[in-house]
Length: 426
Image (cartoon, rainbow, N blue to C red; front, top):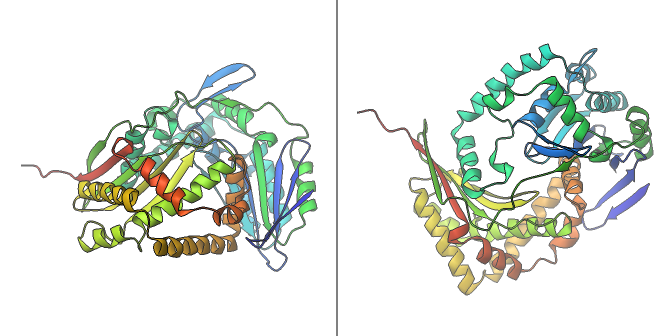
């Protein structure tokens, strides 16, 4: 077992790769009573086309999310209820990249861990249960499609990307999930729920070696074949379309403004770009930036305004969102500020304040077991260790953030998604 010390982050992590290919990461926290476990597969909503055993499979949108729902069913009952009865707080999620199952508990941690590893690794579906779930997920899809914020975001993905499956909703559509059968779910479980394609992250008052022993006992002894993924044609630098608008029941126009970036291959370059992208957004749009003060003063944004750097395999982008009486004016103002930064650079004093603030927030986030475990799982699948950010962050320069703004915040890379109120019937 490998012991990794991250002095700048103040954390210790143990890592072992088991004989079946599973990577286990443990953060010992003997001073705490509660433990947290996260068991995840490198399989998400955008993994709709894959090759396994020499055969290519095209699956309907929403299979990864559907499979997440159905994995809690067991021949004996329901694992969610079993965990809750043991005093655990369990749940799961599916993103574009990964599917993760987790719980936290102060008692019976090992027993709960055994339940988690068992139900995720042993699928059990019937035609009746799959059909029943279709109605439940269909209602969920209906709810999110009626959410103007979700619709605005998904329209931005369609405006930014021409081919990448990030433009498709993780939940799929009512039409796509109608195609899902038990055979579909079993095939996708075989393709992606192999220990060699998964990771187990645990934080709490636990012994790392014992966690590995439990995983060895419960999970398959050998690694199986891992599916190769296909995300289609490589994206070009231009946004697929500049503007997209929808009419829904909203009290004020809402917007998603995005800038299409260039994806880094897996590894620490991807982590560095994430850190640079976050800092670039802070100096461009953060609440201590000149542009934020101007937009707020002119009533073009309000307290709902937010921004983020996002990336998945094969795509990366910056995004800003909120309410605005004039989203096009926000777009123009950001373009003007990016051009000014290109001419004059970022104010050094602002850069230092922003960098200290971002770093402090990131370190404080390590107090959360969930952040530690989910962050490490996502980072591992992306080819780096989550806690390496502390070493890389200090070396990031103002010029890197300026260069990213100059290269990404350009007219051809920009897309604006707006949801406006429905027009009154005359």
